[in-house]
View 1 (cartoon, one colour):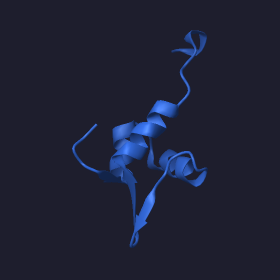
View 2 (cartoon, rainbow, N blue to C red):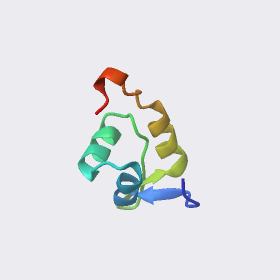
View 3 (cartoon, helix red, strand yellow):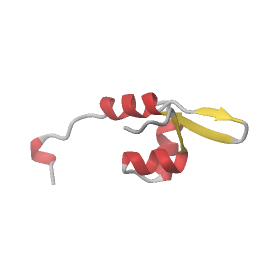
Length: 64
């Protein structure tokens, strides 16, 4: 990961390789923890890493 402690929504989405809409969906459904600082939403680096680790593996027959 990076040396930063937290990322903005666009930064977190870019690092995870997903779009901002999908990132917000993951937050809304409680699968990814985010915090609010004033009007900004941030995602802790540790929470982003944990979310990635919890993603289900791709089955060999479903791989591209």
